[in-house]
Image 1 (tube, rainbow, N blue to C red):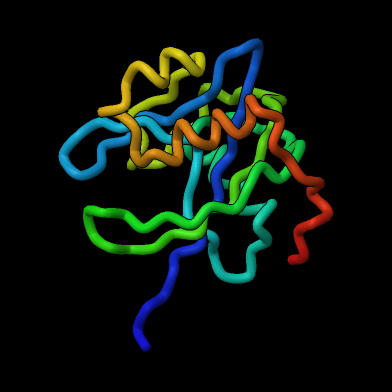
Image 2: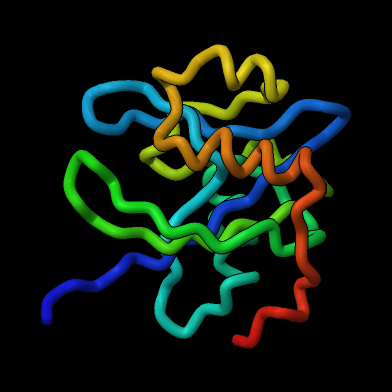
Length: 146
């Protein structure tokens, strides 16, 4: 069987009512997403989330909780993704740091500003993760066994 889900990580980072998003060019359009990316070989889920966040945003963050584990099949290509999403708090911004080549920029948006732009979401998971965070969904980080 050739079916292989892709394991990804993402972070929902909130500061004073706004959330940190990346702007990236995908499938011919500029989209919004949480800092996110693929788990690499020999990497823990926590380390992957911290690495992807720093590489894509220039922000060091502190993971505060496990927000959720989401299963998503992209309608555009049929690829299935398992997204392990964390909540995090911003610690330090390193604006001089070059961002990943796929990232056009970063932006802070409120939930309502994000919700008003559904055509710009990378997937429906972008708003769902924010809504889960705002609803207080969370689990302790020690649920993870790396």
